[in-house]
Image 1: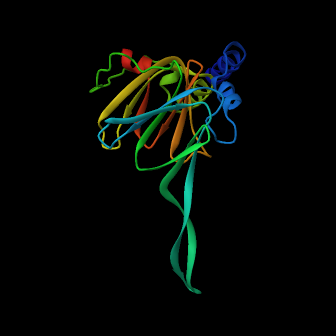
Image 2: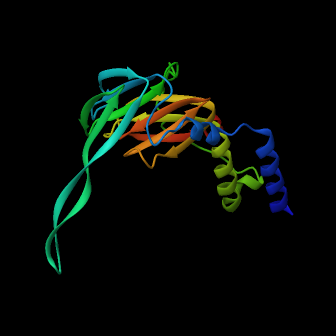
Length: 207
């Protein structure tokens, strides 16, 4: 009976909520970052901003290289993804290797006050969502529609860079963009390339 109530709740949410996943798919075009003006920020391993750019049509493409490999049939070659990424901005290219990159849609700005999160504590209140089997289903559907979260972005060495927050946030790992995660934050796109990050439910922080 409880599971039936949960399913009915999810179906109701399906019809009443706007789908952030659908908005994200409408904006994608063959893996490229296109359709809006983006602010491009480049960071070193310690989170220091060393270069910025902006453009409306952006693409990331991994360079494929051939590496020698030995098999039972002898020496041959296998194709593997290089660490060098080609960044194309409005038709002009740059090669990047190892740097953290953030592509934020115009007018999407990080939170002004960023306080490091050192401890998170929650409690069990007896609701159905506390059940692990139910929580996985509810959170999966909630992510498709967008939910209130805080996104904390760090450099590859763990130094804090910035934090974004929104009430309708959806995220996915990009299949066509190398080592890149896309987020839709209240209808605006944010791409994170080669960075550490945490996506935390606001409700968890409010505890």
